[in-house]
Structure formats: structure tokens, C-alpha cells
Length: 271
View 1 (cartoon, rainbow, N blue to C red):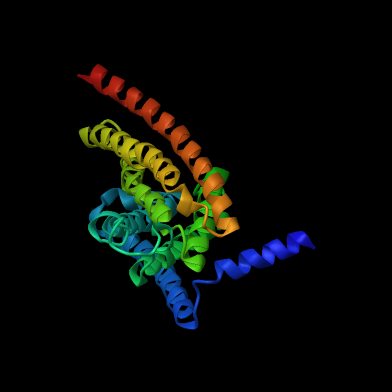
View 2: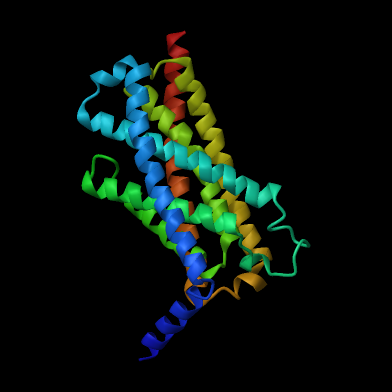
């Protein structure tokens, strides 16, 4: 009985940001995100077949992943640019710009970006499950599931947006990850572009997924008086989901660093 009451309180709190107008806006933005994935997926195939000779030689599995990474890259560019704008260029989270607590600040634009991102994660998860494990294993399911769970909570409650945007900005590394796969699939693993992209990926990952997460936890610590005012489910999600994502980022960073070292050694031997 107590557990049911706590769940009810959480559901009431998480829906506190919602109105009929906002609900329609959110659903529309999710639909835009799903449509975006479908359109970019198809365009990636069309453009690649026109300008990349090797695309026709790919098998069905490779074409599937090639097109999938097309809309993955597009989503990453959109949400990274939007997150940068909202976090730094706008005054939404400036300490003295508003009387409202930073933890409770949102905007129509930020809600739209979260909805689009939910549409992306739904689309990508659907493809991952349908073609499992061709597009990624359980680590991708875990990453996408945790990300979508956190985004939905922030969208419905109107709380913790600043931390969601920090995590979404880490998607800025995705284009480098995808370019590495494209070059590898195209047989360009020994090219200078592959090496340069590996260095960019290493530095980008260090900044956007390691150092940024350190700042993420520092910001939470220095604003913990506000963080404690997040509704219970959201509060405990911040304390658990973020560390899990951080550990996954550290693990992948280790793999990226190891791969870069191998690439640089091969490049050195080939001179």
C-alpha cells in the first residue's frame, strides 16, 4: 500500500509540468523526431548511391547500418547544437537571469528538442530490436533505454533539464564514431582521414563525455540544495542513471584510446 502511494505521488509530480497544449506539442515533436529519422534514413541511401561508388557493393546488412548511422549523425548534430545554444548561448540557465530555480527552468524550444530526441531513440531502439544484434548489442539497448527514460522524466516534470542537455551535448561525439565506421567499411582504414578522425574522436570524447560528466557531477554537488527539490523518482534517477552512463563512457573511452594507439602504430610503421 505504501509503495502504491509513493508511485502515485511520483506520477502526480512528474505530470505537474503537463497541460493539454504542452501534451500536443510534445507528441508533435516526438512525431517530428521519428519522421526525421525515416526521411534521413532514406536520403542517406539515395545520396550515398549517387555519390559513393562503393555503396552499391555493400551487402544488405552493411547498407542497413550505413543508412541507420546517417540519421544517427543528423540527430547528434541537431541536439548537440541545440544543447550548446540552450546551455551557453541563451540565458535560460544563467544564475541571476531569473528568479526560478535552475533545476526547474524549461522553454518551448527545449521541450521540442527533448521530444525530437525521444523520437530518435524510439526509432533507433525499434531498428535495434527488429534487426538484433546487427545494429548493436545490449549495451546500446541499455544506453538508449536509460537516456530515453531520463529524457521523458525531464519532459513530463519540467525538472532537471540542464542535466539532460549536458548529456545530450555528449552526442556531439557521434558523428566521429559514425565516420570511423564509414571509413572502415569503405576500406579507408589506412587513410590520413581515418587517423585524423581517430584523434578528433579521442579528444571529443575526452571533452564531451569525460570532462563534461565531471562538470555534471560538480554542478550537481554545488547545486544540491536545488537537486534535492526534484521529485523523488527524478532525484534518484539523477543519482543512479548518470553514474551508469558515465561508467559506460569511461569504458568506451578506454576502447577508443586503445584503438587509436593501434592506428597510430600502424600509421608509423607504414611510413
